[in-house]
Amino acid sequence: MDKNMNITDILVRFDEITEQYVRELDKYSMEELRRKPAENEWSLGQMYLHLAHSALNMQLRLAEQCMAPGGGSEGAGEKTEAGRAVFEQGSFPPVRIQVPASAQYTPPQPESKEQLAAKLEEARRRMHEIGASLQGVAADRLQRTAAHPAFGALNAAEWFAMPEMHYRHHLLQKERLDAFIHSAS
Image 1: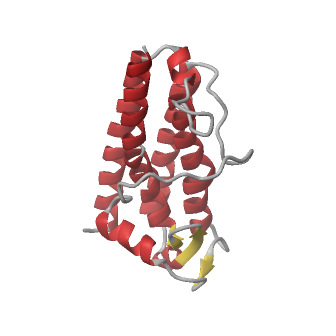
Image 2: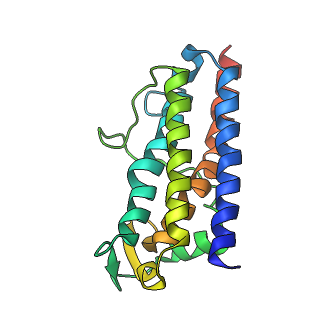
C-alpha cells in the first residue's frame, strides 16, 4: 500500500472513531464522566483527556519532530519486539496497561463535555495537518525516528498511525467504564 493511501485510510478511521467518542458524550452526565471505579483508576472523562493529550503532546508532536529539518535521529535504535508486533498487526494488543499515577501522566478530571469535545476536535484537526505534511515529506526524513517508551524507534509515519490505534485500544477501557457507570446508576 502506498504512503498516501495509508495516510488517507488512517485519517478516515481517526475521523470515525473521534466522531464516535464525541457523539457518545451525550450519553453521560458530568458526574458520570468524573466517576472513578477506584481511587487508582481513571474516570471516563480522564480517559478522554488522555486520548487527546497523548495525540497532541506526544504522538503528533513526535511525528512532526521526525519530519522537521534536523529533527529526530537517524539510526538511533530500533523498534522493540512489541513495537514490531503492533505495526504488523495494526493495533495494540487487547491487554490492560496500567501506568503508576503521576502528575505528568495522570489526566485531570474534565471541566465540561465541551472541553472534552474541543480537545478531541483539536487532535482531529492536528491529525489532518500532520497527514498533509507527511504526504509531502521527503523519503530521507522518514528514516528519522524518535523513541517510544515501549515500542522503540518510530518514524514520522509510525507516530502518525499511533493516535488512531491508541483511540481504538481505549475502546476496551471505555467498555469497562460504561459497565461500571451503568452498574452504579
